[in-house]
Image (tube, rainbow, N blue to C red; front, side, top):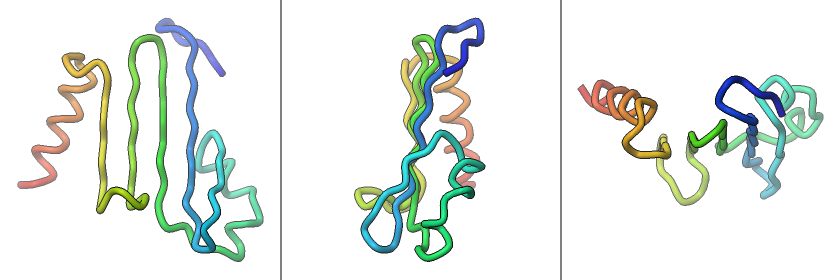
Length: 92
C-alpha cells in the first residue's frame, strides 16, 4: 500500500486461468513472475483499485461479463466522467 495525497492506495489484480484457478497479485508485472502463466492461459482479469474515496473496478471477460466493464465510485466524480468519455468514444 502507498499513499498519494488522497489516502491509502490499495489494488488487487485477479487473473482467471484456463484450469479454473485464479492468480491474485498487485499488478501485471508481478503476475509475469508466477509460473502458473507458463502452463495456463489467462482468460480474463478483474482489477480493483482504491485511493481515498475513489474506487475503480475493471473487468475483462471474467465469467459474468462479456467484454470490458469499467465501474467507478463516486459516480459524480471527475474520474467517473472521464471513464464515461472513454466509453462514449470507444463506440464511435
